[in-house]
Image 1: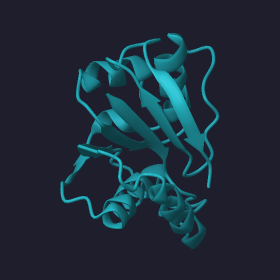
Image 2: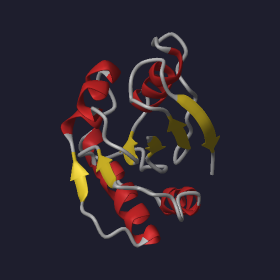
Image 3: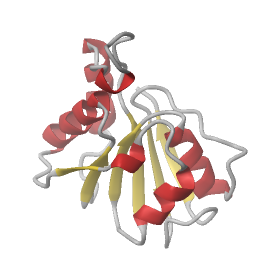
Length: 149
């Protein structure tokens, strides 16, 4: 299976709540640059955090790829979510794109690659990681690439 993990693009610094922060124009450009790396990939589903900036990021990627499926909004991809609980949700689903936030994305990638939370992967806004393995389990996936816009 392949798993892509995308951090949302640059967001506004202020909003009534953190969950309501929108992407900036620069953030939209960053996301489109990262989406270009996904062209031709066999993405079966896009799962995104309910936060506005992650939803906007997922929608931009969906449009750029011409992805016909719906974006699945899941509550377990928020910034402070537990990476161990994320793994429980993934089961053995193939070829997923997860759109989320730091610190979750870095911690999740580190957990999948190393089997522990002590070595998170640095992820800038709109950074895209590609992992591959037989199962989405701690320590059993290989980090193939990380691209930064």
